[in-house]
Length: 347
Image 1: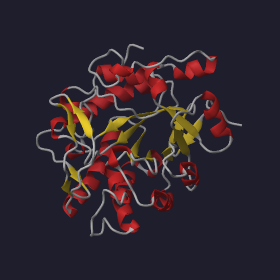
Image 2 (image 1 turned 180 degrees about the vertical axis):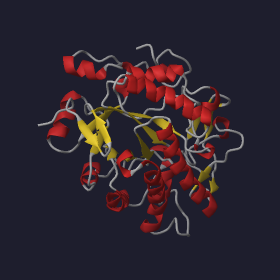
Image 3 (image 1 turned 90 degrees about the vertical axis):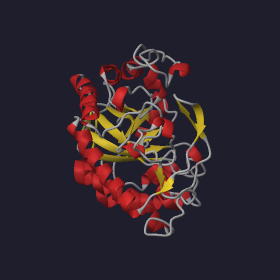
């Protein structure tokens, strides 16, 4: 039976083990939202993972939501990510970029001046986010996207995938959970449109499928994955029937032949394991796994790999610690999203 230490292939991506690093926002981007040498060190330290999935990266300026998060839009950002991929590849690792358009989960304090906050409908999400300029502020009321906005955003996702590969990434992942734009289009609580992108389930699926097709066209299906968490209420996301919505999404995605499906298994009134079984390809499971239950999930055929988040923050050598049975360090949560090297590259 395979274990976490066995190699695995996801589409066109060959991974040396099944211990993957989950995407985690760390708010360490600096001037111009471009990665720098410190970010490259952070990812390079963790390159023993079978696959690193980066923090969420915005595909256009409208897509930025959080403070100090990186993009893949400008030449400087592409060059910054090349530092990261070079550092990971130098140690024999693989890295996939997570593309994250935050949609209505945003504040103007965190965004470039020329950008807008866009969403399927002009419905403000309940909640707040941190800004360096004004502390905690409410999410903004977004503009409802025009048909032209939607078409351009789809194009921008394709260009982001192209830019990620130009920066040396081995693939890209669409962030389709946690209340961000793709999930906003899927969900009845945030999508009140009456045109071809709203109303019926088929219409609500359209944006996410179009984005995936644009990313596949740019990178190839064997280098594109998608991350979901059906029923996740984070960032005021709600849907009348998430089980039905995500079953339909998986059925529509299957013919694309994507590299993998990445599923957060949190209990949210939906059977995420059953939904993942509908996918005709490799599955990555995430959320509160350790060595023993991760190996069990793989042995039972529930997953092809497991992604670990918080353990990789304080244990850049997580793979080695799992192999030797060494005790795991705990992260300093007070420095999770702060500026600088402390709590980031000093573990």
